Length: 123
Image (cartoon, rainbow, N blue to C red; front, side):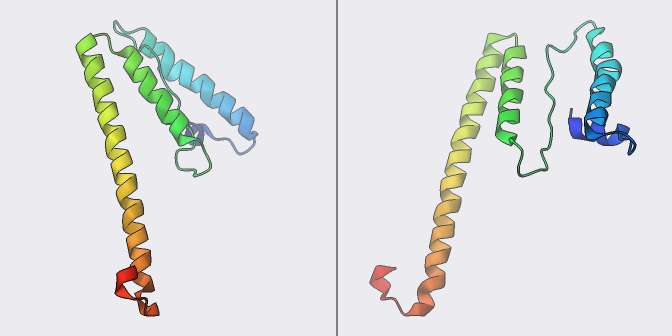
């Protein structure tokens, strides 16, 4: 679950941010974790996602933990291998997209310099 959303739902202006976070952790355990653990097939783990909308937070580390927990929770070897393969393909797609976007950005910047009368052989 997105932990920030839970914190904002229980937010009390009279409390400090630390108190609100502690209250959200208690709420998470009482209203979600404990009831889910009582099911016949309880979740194996959970990951708290925080500050995903904040550019200064460490998104990659949180998503990496999420992927690790998903991979660890898959019992079936074939499904686990499929998951790992998909993640590898996603990584390849991400790398390809990053390279293409950088190349496109560089080409666009070079084209924007065309008004400088640079000989076409140099562009």
